[in-house]
Amino acid sequence: MIFSSVLFMFRFLPIFLLCYFVAPQKVKNWVLFFGSLIFYAWGEPVYVVLMLFSTFSDFWHGRRIEKRKEEGKSAKGYLVSSIVVNLALLGFFKYADFAIGVFNNVTGASVPLLILPLPIGISFYTFQTMSYSIDVYRGDAKAQKSMLDFGVFVTMFPQLIAGPIVQYNQVDKALTNRRTTPQGTAYGIRRFILGLGKKVLLANSAGLIWTEVIGMASEERTMVMAWLGIIAYAFQIYFDFSGYSDMAIGLGSIFGFVFPENFNYPYISRSITEFWRRWHMTLGSWFRDYVYIPLGGNRKGIKRQLLNILIVWMLTGIWHGAGWNFLLWGLWFALFLILEKAFLGKVLQKLPALGWVYTMLVVLLGWVFFEISDMTQLTSYFETMFGMGSAGLLSGATLYLLSNQWILLVILVVGATPLLKKGWLWITAKHRESIVVSVIENLALAAILIVSIGYIVESSYNPFLYFRF
Image (cartoon, rainbow, N blue to C red; front, side):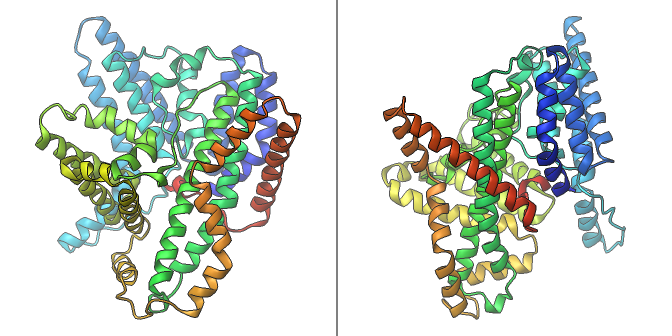
């Protein structure tokens, strides 16, 4: 279903963009709304009703909250109702089978699993609609009077299924008063193509390495192979998710929206605190604004602050998926964030090189928790990484894989740093008026687009990792 939506987007995006640009200003939101519904329904024909229900529910709750506040009455009941509806939908579709499994294991019962397919992007649009109700309650945003405009906010396909998570007060004005400009369109096209290249050419290539490593029998996987595999996965998930975010931001710019940035070269971080300021920044902002600060943030003493960090990261782990591995992943990062807040952060500031090594080690081990849901396999993979596997340190297969993939690994390392961006900005600043530089840039973008589309059409391996959340 996910892949069919992606193919649909690439196949019909030119037609959709043409319709959007030729439509009168008053009609553009209708085009964007129905185009987004068609895009979503192409992969999820049933669950589009669920998304429309969520849209209507939060639109109605927002209006009721504002009306109660204007009347000088308490609106907390409507806010709680909105949050309960959103969390109930998310909980039912995402966590029901996990809860049933836990119940069966604890009680010995045999309650059958529901085996419901997870609605694409439900974690993202649920958080977005909750931010709307909360913002209206706080007075940070006015309740939307137009069901159509609010529907555009919820269903907008560029960022609907994998973020970035857009808070309502970040786009409320643009929903009713925006203009498409040649500059915004040109920037959006460049950003979209670069994101597409990151996802298709880099993430997919790294993913093939990870697929090969994780597909091996545990007794054949060497220590070096295990580390190579999780490094490849780290690059895959970064270029996959940041690439999709770039595409979403680019399409948003074409439509006249400014979506928030979601990644800022997280693999150059020198602490876990810095890493989470650079990785999935919109999710971090959401939990900060709607969970961490309401819990008291850092205003109630260090002990309460550390407890708040623990709560936020347990929720962050569970948000990513219904599995013990995701809870462990959240607790893993909570541990190091607490240590850094307590004392480790000051040490790392004095030793930046050591800080980077420590951060990458923690992050790579964290990705093992994140990706492997089977506890037996998870334990086995950790054992292999630390030399306790039966295959030893190296093997001929390991050396063969390294000899074939070292160029790709170098490209992935460089691409995960700001070196290329800084270098290109230096060239364009120095040769600002040069036509040659502009021609080279456009030819490079055209090549990335053509090769990426060819890869999508021909390759059977094209996973979008974050769509499952």
